[in-house]
Length: 457
Ligand SMILES: [Zn+2]
Image 1: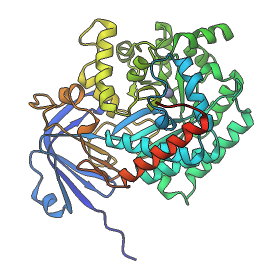
Image 2 (image 1 turned 90 degrees about the horizontal axis):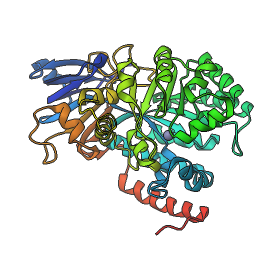
Image 3 (image 1 turned 120 degrees about the vertical axis):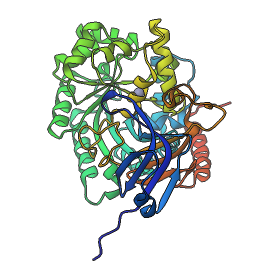
Image 4 (image 1 turned 60 degrees about the vertical axis):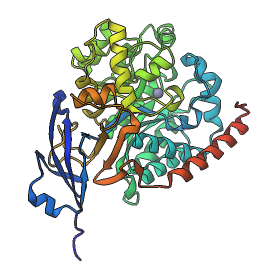
């Protein structure tokens, strides 16, 4: 049997931009892809050899060529809920709209909402998303995995769970469902799901018992699975934990020995300096969601302090219910502006810092060789985002990094490549009928609102 030949693709004339090890580098150059990996990278014009061998050449003149962006926190089920609960603080937003609507969603609703949200992520340049999945039913989880496999980007599915409150699940159910999902994602029959990985997703400290947190984290650590958890998003959540156990969120996690390099802390807005020290010592990652934090009036995470302590920080949009888009480039600008506003320091976050937050981490990545996240280098997975800066929004460009953070937005994304496959090609989604999907989602969302008894204008 003949071995399958890898397709060779060449990207030329672009401004290549990497953030390996936190150091931003840009240069005019070219990049060759062979199969699902970057084969070669260079400065100036591509060598004749690569030009001859390439079956497809993308002209990236006046464009930025980046490692694929990671949207490190979202809730795809909320794609059907954006704009429904605007202008409320976190707990009212959850109780009045988000929780009742989640309860009314069928697996088919979940599938369509996930497809729509994933296509939006893709169009906005994300090659990887972390989906904090709030609908625990196996059919809903399987529907989300099916949507991700069809859309083709990489997804970490953090299986959401709580064991306290009226919707809490028994610990046995949480553990057996995690076992089931772990088996599903490792099954040889699930070939398209090779881009999907698993995380444990406790929703928030105040919704999880000490015992469940300890036991589920032990389960995750046995299998090398990370833990992805909302922490200290709003001040009233912190007060609830202080009333329950006398500990703030990070103190509680550290006290249970559930804080480590395998922990992804989403938000971390209301954290003390002592808690920042605990995060630093643990090696945990923080996922910063500035747009959502502003939207729900939650506050400003102390990102500069985190970076100064060496805490790794990734960037997330959060769910469409509290953003309301999935535009990571928009979040990048908001991250920089919020940090300046919150600290009174115009240099609190620079474009290089924010770009690193988008490309420097691939939490949950199982296929990236160690140390190459954020780099465009031979051997790295061929996950590439190309952003067109040749438009009235961005020109003239004196610094590609500045233009990316302060000018560009999701609609400027030109091409998105995941594992060597072009999923967005010159602004067109290649993997599905986008207009048909939008119409299907419009109808399904209207039916969902009717079922849930929600009147829309
Ligand atoms: Zn969230």
